[in-house]
Image (cartoon, rainbow, N blue to C red; front, side, top):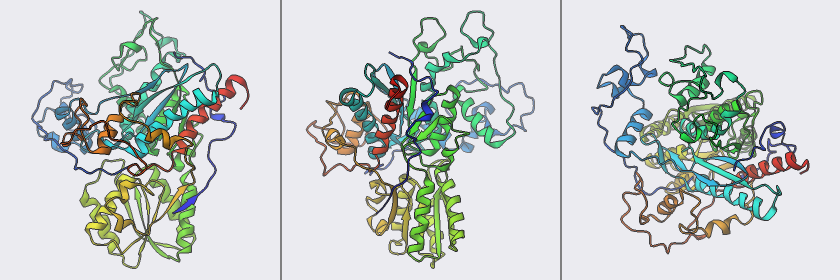
Length: 538
């Protein structure tokens, strides 16, 4: 394993926080079972509102842009995207999944947290629980807050709290969750036209025409979908989320989030950053490494504790040169994380006279690929036998699919891999695919263990860890048993053994994420920034 050290983008003076109103008071992994896919009945009818019924001719309307039910054609479900069909399956057979949970620690100042507690899933909104990059990252945030509040007392007289949500490693779902972080800031909008009063005139937007630019349209579409435009009112005073706590009244208590720790995925961080910047809420990510996020003109309230991918791309090219390869293949995931890295790789390889044999994308943004897609990628690699070396720039869930395909194709001895930090040293990739990943050289930012965290985590159990609402799921997955009284999920229904309560986490049965330092650093960055703003020193 090659460990690479690179400077963090988080400057010592924490300028991202300098002029931000944060002192507002407020009160990756192995799965041993197959995913259960419930049957889906396309003929179920539900009432709906038809905003385009006044059109006599709707042939010019692109059906992909409008919910299929609006056309009242019972067979249009066939044309739905996998995500749409999956969400309908989810609601029909698992009406309470995903269960929206939140880890809340009361404090004078509250930090939001966006963690990938669950994996992505194409058929269900959220997949199985993710122990390493999800549950352990969440526990690192909570553990660091304990240290800040109880041991270090970094901000005397101020207790830092947390409001942590799960984004399921899915950018659209993560954006929906991030709406909770802005609710308390909506009241800060300085616009009398939308102030909460009984005589205010609400402007109802039925729909939006535009934008001309695709880049702008993507951002606007992600914002409008949160309020289901064109079906609901677009005003700040009316509450689109039907949450009485945030309804327009003089006595409503707004939860003000001082900053957000997360997200893990670069794709999700891009979407969330575009929302938070509207309310000037700072964001510090711990795993998002895409070079796109270095653009301070677009992401002025975003920073991160982990280095940009540009550093590991350069390291990968140096490794290829040292190995004497002149003809390599590149597999990269379909996301800002993978695409930006591929662009840099392609340019650097060409500059060093290294040719690219095969270029293949791993499905990421558009859903979850099936096994045949991974088989096709391996087949294409095999068509170029001279290119024995391959660079894979992707996340663990997707790369695990590639390695399974390598095993199925009996090609375990035919490739040498150079891997990115998104999948290196992840048990989700290596478990069961040991022959396929053998000999891999991977690149990771250098990280140290979080002092005391291993003992803290191994001492947790279901009874003493009530503040983490996902811990029972983790426990069931880790020990392959059903905890008495736990709610049924799509992933625990097949367990036949009941958890006894005597199970224990040990160093032998628990594998740790190696980059948890960056999670702890993100929380510490907020603590030091708040301290500097309050006391003027570090």
